[in-house]
Image 1 (cartoon, helix red, strand yellow):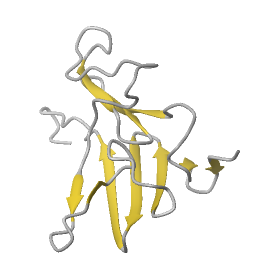
Image 2: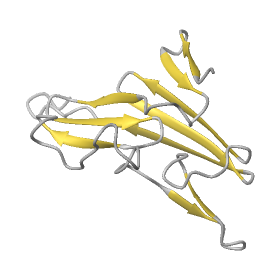
Image 3: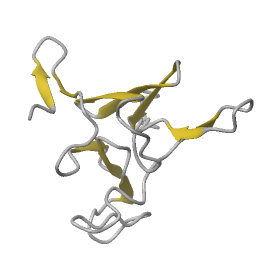
Image 4: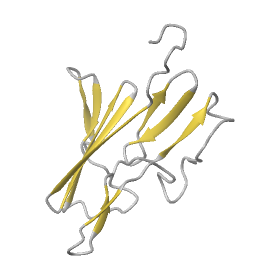
Length: 135
């Protein structure tokens, strides 16, 4: 079963199905702050050390998968229906929910469509500003 492909022109790995057998992760960060994000917005952030400086705990191979994470929720006020901008944690049926995740160098973009509403979220860690040069 095909879940994605390499986009050589954009230098990204594109995940076209959110129901991957395991979470596919990307590293975001600088020398001070780092983050791991998965194709369904699970992950954690850390200061200096991924082993000792974590803000959120993501335990691989646990149930539920991909939690905790960086989730955005959307709600249709008229119908009361709700979903997440990434497939998880809500997990709407894939017949109605489409998602594309693009893991690039130091960023991840997740675009989804549900019930005619398109959302796009980009996760990244800004580069640190050098106080000596202003850059």
